[in-house]
Length: 112
Length: 111
Image 1 (cartoon, chains in turn blue, orange):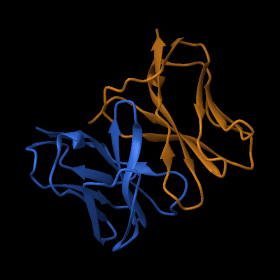
Image 2 (tube, rainbow over the protein chains, first blue to last red; image 1 turned 90 degrees about the vertical axis):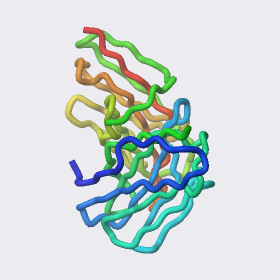
Image 3 (cartoon, rainbow over the protein chains, first blue to last red; image 1 turned 120 degrees about the horizontal axis):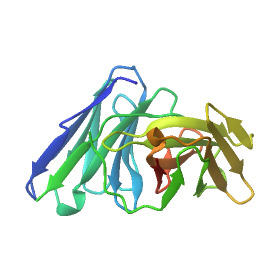
Image 4 (tube, rainbow over the protein chains, first blue to last red; image 1 turned 90 degrees about the horizontal axis):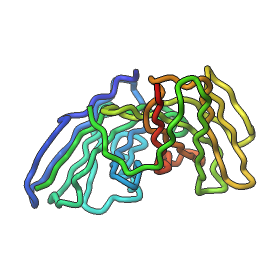
């Protein structure tokens, strides 16, 4: 398996609080992605990065921001968590931007 | 690990039978397609891929078929085993744009 880890693995937070999820990869991959997974929707892209400090929005980016200050780390921040952001979040990476992306184990976030 | 109680189409097959999982993709310009397997509590894992200039590709016990005319992908699993029970996703790619995933199909293998 590609070395990609997410932290925390589980988090419960209150509505209105900021939350940061972390993704760390040891493959020196240029591209990194954040997806969320919800019943009936499959995996939907939140944001992605195509290099250090280079990021772009995905399909469901409202309410989220990202940062990539190092190749190996990609942070996802919920500025003010809402109940609609209760989900399972997956980070992924690949080297070429196309083709197979390697996924982390996921973070289950519950906003109460 | 993490998983989601997805309300998905479900395919139930007897152990030893062949399975066929179908997917309709969205973008006629997509040039690369992947099938992923997601077991309970884990992230998606790559199974097999196919480029748009091909209509069939075979792996170990798996075959992917691509019909660009009707924007349809299928994944065939031969001699299905209990370990094949999982959710299967197709994903499509155009150039360097991020993968776009389908909603998934749950495969349940009956021993």
